Amino acid sequence: MNGYVNPADELFPAATAAIEDAATRHAERVARERAKLVRSDGSPVYAIQEHQEREAAILADAGAAYDAETARHLTMADDAREKAEAELVTLDGDPFDRLTADEQAKASARQTFVKEDCETLTADELVRLARAALVAKDRAGCYLFLRYLARRPRATGDAAGLATVVRDLGEVFGAGERGEKRRGLERKVEAAKSLKGRVDMARRRVDGRHAQMEAGLRRQLAGMF
Image 1 (spheres, helix red, strand yellow):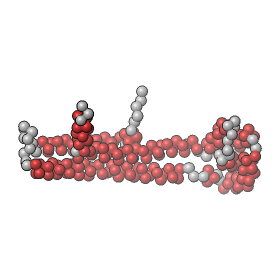
Image 2 (image 1 turned 120 degrees about the horizontal axis):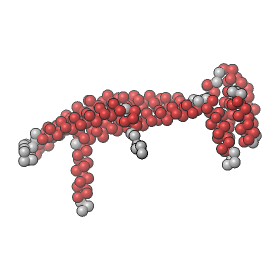
Image 3 (image 1 turned 90 degrees about the horizontal axis):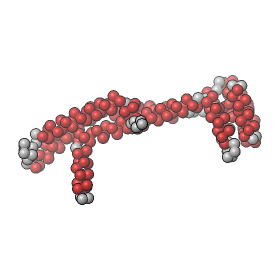
Image 4 (image 1 turned 60 degrees about the vertical axis):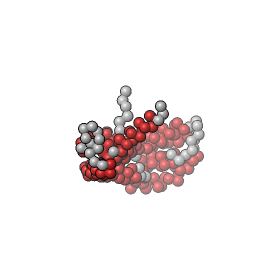
């Protein structure tokens, strides 16, 4: 059974691997430097205040080094998200813009009649007319039926037939392809946000926040028993 795959791991595998590697190296550096602050018996080498100051400096230096190394991944994530979001804004547009000038003129001339038909004819009659436009590759007619059938209120009995033909009309103008592209772009936005979160989560192992959280949980659990 396949489990959940984080979108950042899927779309930015090199970046996530580099982030984890940087966090591991800098966390190991922190551990080595902090080990120098205590003697073999675990007692501190320096007085409490100096010990705390030295420890804080170790964490700050490691955090700064980690930030410098991972900054490019944050920039990449922001760029990828902004580009994907911009594409999402312009993805759909009006199918009218996909008609040729001649088709646009035909659609404009027939607009009133098709609109009236979509408001007054039965669902079966409209499905037949829309199917006829599809078979004839009448793109102007397909555009008009798509426009007005999509707005028509659907009674329970005719909802399925109208929904199917509206879907097929949409395919004339690439609705299915755009839907697939939309899902891909939304996945990229999610991946970019996840990558930024990964940078922060990994940093917690470097700057001591992860260890503090674990210590807090241990104290909380100890107080329950």
